[in-house]
Length: 156
Image (cartoon, rainbow, N blue to C red; front, side, top):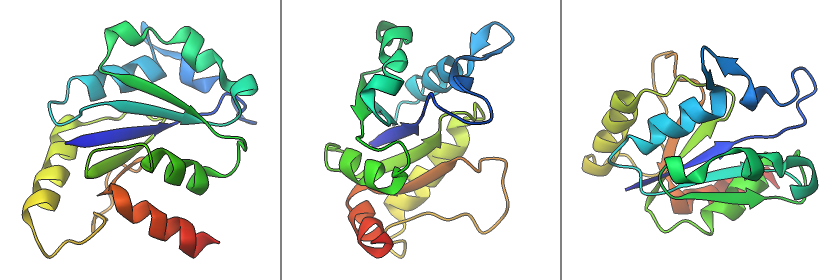
């Protein structure tokens, strides 16, 4: 199973609160959560953001009853994304995690499922899937959950 980590932050300098902007009749964050909830390989979803004081609106504005199990993770620093992901990974039980850019509603479940199938069946792939072709799915990154600890150590 896969646990997506949706990276969000309300304090964007160019377009604050962009996750709550609408495309048609649906907010960007709702498009992302709906599509992830429709995927049978997704067990739960984490919304990973910065300081609670500045980002509590995610918890207030998202109707969690509409989606699969949603967890909110608040990090003490808005800018330490790698550390935020590492700490969320410490909470995840699934072998695989998926980073999703919270401002990009281009969620394609067929693409995610192909990555997951290839990753879980191909023993040559160790920790990450990095596409060798440029795709429209830039904000999607599948990896073995435990491997993010290594990335965090490399960053330090």
